[in-house]
Length: 235
Ligand SMILES: NC(=O)c1ccc[n+]([C@@H]2O[C@H](COP(=O)([O-])OP(=O)(O)OC[C@H]3O[C@@H](n4cnc5c(N)ncnc54)[C@H](OP(=O)(O)O)[C@@H]3O)[C@@H](O)[C@H]2O)c1
Image (cartoon, rainbow, N blue to C red):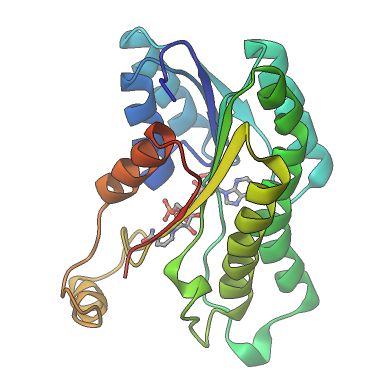
């Protein structure tokens, strides 16, 4: 898909990997809906930066743990831009959740934000993509969907669910809409991670290095260019 004149919604776009994806998409000539939850200031700075580069951009706040808010986000973006051609489900929560301490509320928070929201955003935006006769849904999952970690079970389960959702939606929405996922390994460590931790994580990978947000950007652009829906694993 050529991005000039198209509209792309990136969730969790105010910072880190989502921000890098939003910037790259804007550079390809798309209009960008920058979703944020708590990072209002960063989202508005990004929108100003994108507009300075002649991109039509707008910030939208929504709590994706709340399904009503998730649907409101889809309506707001459609009202503002008239269409959404590409949805990048990037927003997620990622925290340590030791087995003994996981509560039902924790479980719901992970599953609601990381899995339910991508489903209901897809459901809300698919009709507009069908009307446009083309659409792409790109889910940012995680390699831990395939190789889960014991101290982050709700997160890993949410990402495994996102992988299944990708494959199910790919069949449901074909042929006009292609649905893909990327399964990154460690690309960008949490804020404040020590150099020692970075070294341990890098050494645990066969290639002995971390990925980068640019790796995610390249993958997303490839999936937008491609005529296929597919799952890309960084392992
Ligand atoms: N970082 C990595 O190495 C890595 C590796 C594998 C997979 N991934 C996946 O790649 C994606 C991006 O990674 P990242 O590290 O850049 O993510 P991140 O910084 O942990 O989170 C991205 C955004 O998610 C948003 N978010 C969290 N809870 C939300 C909620 N309830 N409602 C709406 N938005 C919410 C936050 O928005 P606000 O800031 O506006 O609150 C946050 O900026 C994630 O899906 C992650 O699971 C990352």
